[in-house]
Amino acid sequence: QIRRVSKMGFDWNMVLILIFLLGFGLIMVYSASSYVAVRDFGNPTHFFSKQAIADLIGIVGAVVIMFVPYKLYNKVCMFPWIFYAVALLLPLLTIPFGISSHS
Image 1 (cartoon, rainbow, N blue to C red):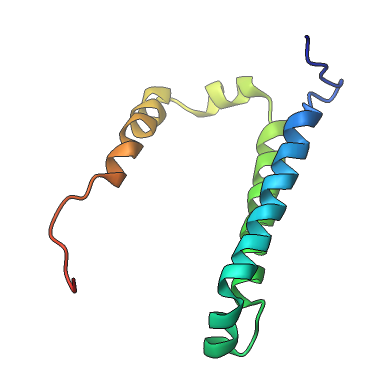
Image 2 (image 1 turned 90 degrees about the vertical axis):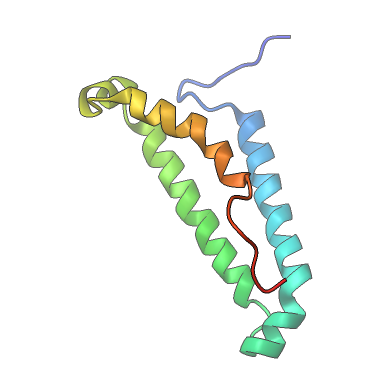
């Protein structure tokens, strides 16, 4: 089966999955943190609204990046190998270096 992509380049299946995951994540954040948010901030949607704002910033950033021609990235970025190296080294952030405190 071949996926159909619209003229704008959207894969609508991926867009729907993204919307579902963002919505489900927001529901889970609200469900898990509403009690603590009321207790500490007096507002049950404190953490929910922060997460929703972060989601919106991410969506806007993704849309902006989507409409920038990819050849422009090659002109602007003089050393693309730096980005590849950083991307390959990102998993090292999960390795627990150093000592633990307050345990």
